[in-house]
Length: 54
Image (cartoon, rainbow, N blue to C red; front, side, top):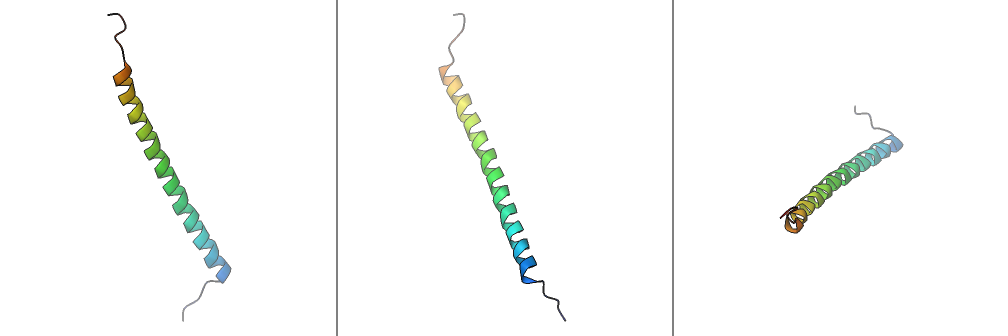
């Protein structure tokens, strides 16, 4: 015999899993965005850097 979970509990678990996945994807996307912006800033700074006392 297998016991089935109540429908409401299964739905709650599904929502929690979906929200967790979405949160992880959003966090990963933010990390990638920050890394990209940092890389672009460093490239820009190298290109626009002028000698201070020459």
